View 1 (cartoon, one colour):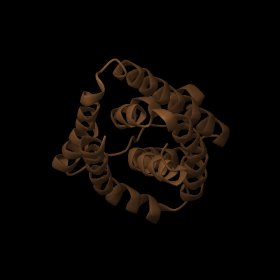
View 2 (tube, rainbow, N blue to C red):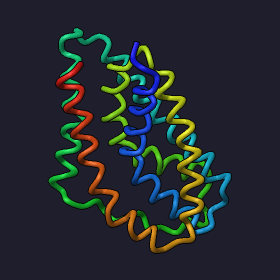
View 3 (cartoon, rainbow, N blue to C red):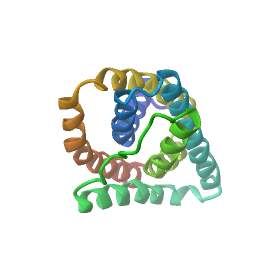
View 4 (cartoon, rainbow, N blue to C red):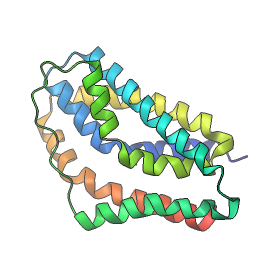
Length: 185
């Protein structure tokens, strides 16, 4: 069994890497005065759907012979290379948010989560024994993300910095995760 600290570090690292863009979206929701309970509930609902899709993908991957598992590292590696080659992310949604409810926030979270699924499926496959701890870590970090976004929602300078630099960090974390799965699993 893997060290609990290593699992927690993996959970935190993969969450942060795959959810920097969500922090920006959440910050925008809070900055535009969408009711906090709608934002938080929508984020949990949308992220739960991402976890469910990732678990289904990991379950399907159990049918793959063990010696091929490391090939799943190609997914986050490819995502990281793609992000690195693009050099920039599309600008964050500038839609009106007065009418945004729980379902709207959840759907935006889910639609924004393709990179999450691409990273979580291979992670869940190689972390079978500790999958529960990774998911609990993610659920706790959603609360942290919502609190941080709420605090950032009124600070335009910080929002500008996240928009400018957040996309530059993600590719390297994805590439590192993909390389780790390819080499060590």
